[in-house]
Image (cartoon, rainbow, N blue to C red):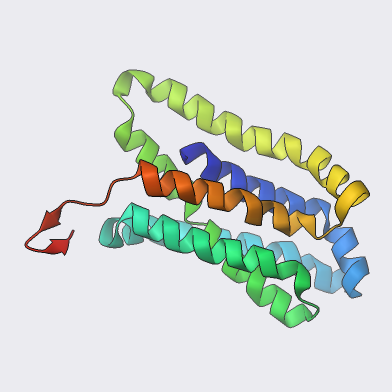
Length: 183
């Protein structure tokens, strides 16, 4: 579960970068406008990072991850269907904000729940998943572009994220209840 979060975010960002030319050509976006496509996603991704740990502590890691993953899945499923540049930028910013919770919360969960003797192995596996997503993305995008459509640069994340949501649902326990309320 914790490696899927990092992998989905990295894969999405890399697929946006790789598919930018096809996206610009399909929607008739200029060179200058195209520069904002990746930026909208990445800036939102970085913006939410510091707030994510606070939200996870306040609302619960499970709730934040499930809510943000659901919104991210919905947004990435709808992005290829958008033909308005302004709406695309807004949706990419929403996708960045929601997926920005995956990095810190999944790593925090892994580090807090893995025995100390496996800490180095956990960090190595996490880094390998991030690096693997970066290296798999060009081949995956090339396959999608050649045999499916450029739209799969977004739909791939929309297909993988529900798998992560299932892992989060079954892998992260609800906080203990105190006085009838969840902590």
